[in-house]
Image (tube, rainbow, N blue to C red; front, side, top):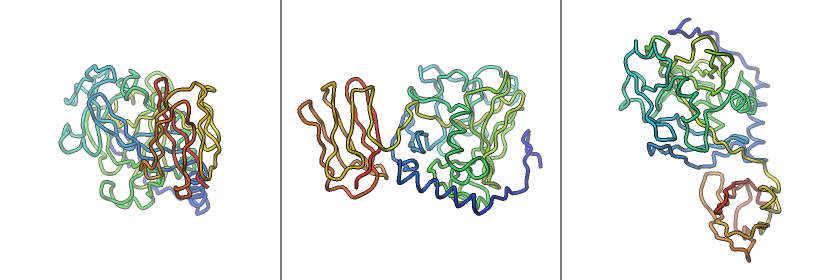
Length: 328
């Protein structure tokens, strides 16, 4: 079956029970060992003032929502192109909304961008980027591979997705929605059934790969063909900072947190003797401890916390960092 310029294999991808079970086990182990799919609640904002919830999946922090910005992170305006013929003739950056209707579609689905806008390197908020092909491979690999990863990425149910969407469990917290596409000829289609996300890397000139999700399948497909950079597709931004797994840590040899796991206290070896603002969050994003440490005090009492996995976030004048730890 052909939809616009997309050729879709309508045969449902059959995944063995073993693969599905293994995917669940991977996610479960990740959540207990390294807070890998913790849904740790953070936010990031763009230059337009849009605020996005984020989610940590393995060592990556992703936006849980599609990008909506109308300006680059240097405050330059991105051209809005509504006319179909004008869109099809573009070789410069542009954005749009599905059916050119921001009131109906922007809140849930965000904006659509061509690859020329992605290629500026300025689309995401400062400190974030449009994920590379390797970034997507790492995410998909962690979720069990391309044949099953879509299940963990898609929002559950049919509030937005076309029925059946029966494989979706959103176990990663990514909450992918079926935003549809703007095709090479400028025509909009596929909302409710399909969505695609840009990467920031090219396979070759005029070949810009993207990841494709469907209401029919648990598979994440990778497409790349000539002139696909003219599509209008969704964007999810990724934090430049790579999260680290549970364990004692170092931050440029200036900071150490120990022990990990911990029972009653954790200690911060503040080598640079700076004043630190410390926050500790549980797995649902609630701040359970907030404290300022000066250079004479380096311990935090955690004996009243329930057993489980937490995130400690530390800020000072020179840097900020966050790390997972386990409360025994």
